[in-house]
Image 1 (tube, rainbow, N blue to C red):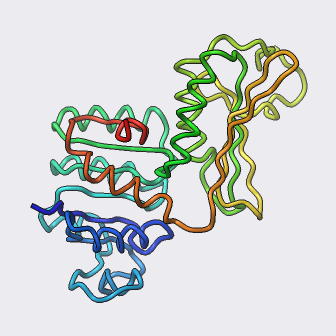
Image 2: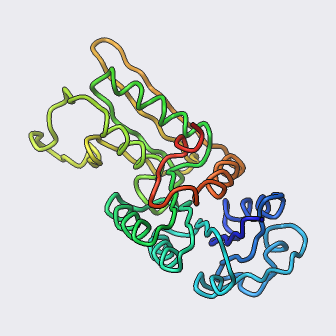
Length: 265
């Protein structure tokens, strides 16, 4: 039986590409789409394809009237948590594509999902090469004590750091060795220039024209340095295959799972 999918943020940069991919997938059926400004339009046409007879809803609540197996959210940071909890409450699996959630947000989502026996999946970045950035960085952190994360994005990106940068910092925090850098609390001057502390890692966000999305882990050791970096292009296509994989796997296990490498491995 085909996986019945609702895409929230269906006319966005990634959401539109995902709608086209779900429509094209042999094992999936697009049963709903959410985009407030495009409400009433055919989801296939709005995504740049042919009409499929599925009207875009103005809210996720309206879209969830139809039977559904998985909701994928590519909306905005200020609504994704609400969408996740509402979807879980209906016993439907949820894939988080939107960045901006904190560790506390994810803990709350995980608790709700476990209570309902529902699967939830999240990744800071659904591209394969961004996943390898995280995987290789975690490997390096076991051997090199000092690491910081630099997160680059376009001037208009509202959330800091990006989901890629936040997830990377949290994963590095779980495996890194003690830093040799002077603690931020012991510094003088403008301590904010040392970035934000996420877990046990300093993260610095750059927002300016000329960037789409880039993230790097910078490792330092005496007389040497290692930089592991991911750069995104202007297309949303790199994120689609990873999201499709998450749709296929999210119902395999109740509770929250994070990091695309869990599904790749």
